[in-house]
Each structure stands twice: as C-alpha cells, then as structure tokens.
Length: 139
Figure (spheres, rainbow, N blue to C red):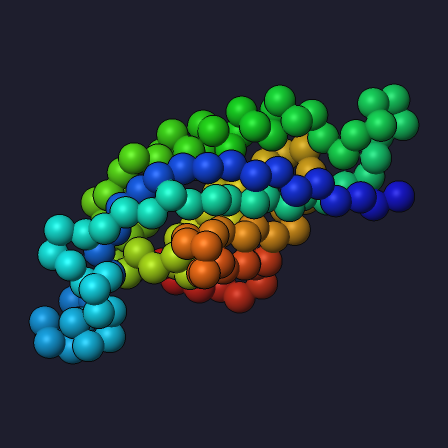
C-alpha cells in the first residue's frame, strides 16, 4: 500500500530578483519592487510530500524524526535567515521562488527513507509554487 505524508516547515530568507542578462531598467520593469537593490524578505512555508509503503511494524512511511532532521540540516539551516543571492545555487540564477523550489526539490530528493513526491513553497499568502521534478532545470 502506497501512502503519502506531507510535512510543513517554516523559514525566513531574503532575496533580490535581478538578472545580469537585463539592463537595470529591464530588471525594474520585469521584477518591479522585488528588484530593490537591498533585497526583501519572506517567511516561507515549505510543504514536503513523501510517499512509500507503510511499514507493517511501525505503521509509518518513514520515521518523522529522521525526516525532520534531514529537512532541518539540508534546507532550514542552509537557507534560513540567509540572503539567497549570496548562496552558491543562485550565483548564476535569479533566486525566484520557482528556482528555489527546484533547488529544494533537488536537495530533498536525497532523503533515503521515502520517495519525494513534490514540494510546495508558499512565498506569501497569495503566492505558492509546487514542483514535482521531472524537467531538468539548470539553476
């Protein structure tokens, strides 16, 4: 029996949406207030959905403590309270929430106890993004 588990995590980070491929005026036109030279912050909500067989002994897909530990070490400690533009994955990519979602999926897909199905990243109460892998995006 395949079952799904979705776990929610919170972290804060800042970013500036700015592409070196655009002029300053093009960046302002494309990204608007998100192109502020000093950046701006978000309180992100990350939902991680994993799937797997329910273990007959434990009755669970995976050990929640191990999932929490993995997410904390690999995502929250790395991205929390950071300026995303300064982190290596975004040296050559605009740190949009779409690109951040792809990077988080890539990282979380290494969780060994269950299969990562998708992530959902809420940037604001009006904006959320889901990514379920598949396409090879370069970020």
